[in-house]
Image 1 (cartoon, rainbow, N blue to C red):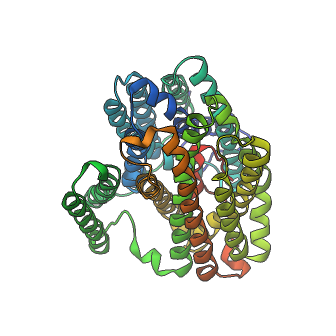
Image 2 (cartoon, rainbow, N blue to C red; image 1 turned 90 degrees about the horizontal axis):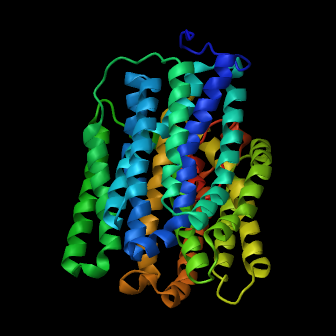
Image 3 (cartoon, rainbow, N blue to C red; image 1 turned 120 degrees about the horizontal axis):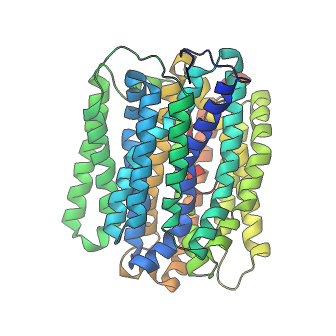
Length: 490
């Protein structure tokens, strides 16, 4: 089949347009589906591999660490070497590493596989949306991205059911194996129906920035997770070295001619404020959705399928209300929706802490999940639109990538630190009694982070309609950890 030339000529109603849309939807759903079910599978992985809580933390964090360190660099690779080429490499990489994860004989091998899988995820995450932006005709672009977002949300909603069923009926290993046929189909679609995009002029890639950022984030997470087995001087030394790495990252980005994170964007108070909100709220969300399946299955004895289905109210509310929340934000400005949305998310997480042994789903978990879902639906669209609206349109891609990287970084730090702060680390971290007692403390801490996000939103986000006047057409933070842990996109 002869492909049309690139540079935004594909029409939505054409056969090539439909195939391109299918390829990008399924491609982006690979990472979303995988992340959705990994948390649900953690109890089964722990039983099968004899994994302690620290190992389960690393299974989640290893992926987030790879993505957060390489996401911005991966976007530059696509611009320089061609979006189609980099996307195809990401598909093959993700599929191969998924097989490694599924075959892992131990927790250590699974963690290594998740690190490698995160590298493939970093190549996939910016590529699907960027291909749509670069390939579709400007008149059809908004419609194509809307379809991509909606169908992607439907795919993510299937994740908890499909993953829970596979875990209960077969093995947790099949949540990784199922990526292979999907990836093969995506690879065939892209090879046959998607043309290459124009490449930008060659420029130096910010490898030093990516390396030192990964060392800094990895050091902090290592110190937090392994603190019970480290001496105090060792823990302090690792934290000091990690802080020095992150300070070095800022210095590198400030001096680099081609930084992967242009620091001048943060001079805009709206952009800086929206990312600060992302950092606080997505830290709370990630810790909550890491611990909730462990609590539901380990303490309340839910099956994997039942714990996945417990998230259905959040999924439904997000799908039903996110678009309306976006329109509300355009009418009245983003400050109030973001502020009250963060507050409701915090209240919902706090209420989830009341879900203990002996309580019923309808009288405790369901109200908490409804409040949580309402807050998330109210918050996500204006947050995304604010990030996009704070920068010139030609820099919207890097703004989206930065916001995603901030969300992934917030998630991995929270999953490392909050269990320690709640008393869930150490040898007894798998003990149901310790998990039950620490779960409420962890939920309260997560709720506190969301309240901090609400305060930051109220103080830094302008109330004017212009602050969110640009339509929300792109996945920002919502396509980061929370979406991959049971929450659909806006």
